[in-house]
Length: 210
Image 1 (cartoon, rainbow, N blue to C red):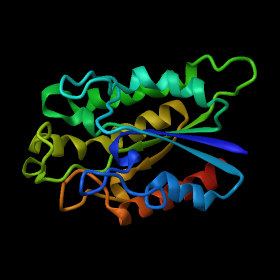
Image 2 (image 1 turned 180 degrees about the vertical axis):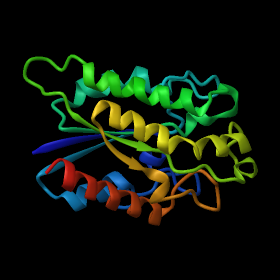
Image 3 (image 1 turned 135 degrees about the vertical axis):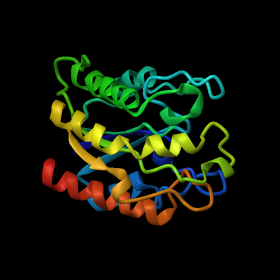
Image 4 (image 1 turned 90 degrees about the vertical axis):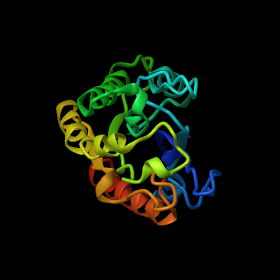
């Protein structure tokens, strides 16, 4: 059985439009599990508010760089890590440029590639997923840490992430080309978005891993 770790934020966790959580059958990791079948084990490791490398003063313990080594250790051996972070790095108080946000994603890629998995576990492949766009009306949403500039930054990340994937030999998906945020909250995917994301990731895995 091949194992996949889905390491991401609230759109991996499956935050729904009411602030709760989509059922596993709706969330993209759950849909991916169904598409791949019994020969695969899809592990959900999504957390609302998770960043690549930043400590959030309003939502503590959300730094991906701190959590990633724990996940890599507890879930090894892994065949693939799907890394889907960057939306929360666009929060206004981080003042991070798109290039700096992409550097955060690069730091996580390097952590995966150079982590000590021990003598019996291989280094997993990486599928780097650039975030869906943040809605232009996000300032009208309940998520006070995001503003119009956050939305603009999110629209610059795809090409930067793609270059990182090329540099480190990762698989790549531009999430903004397959899904987007709901009109309701301007940040999270609805069920159709999760379906589209799962379908796109499934096709990449079929070509690049099977």
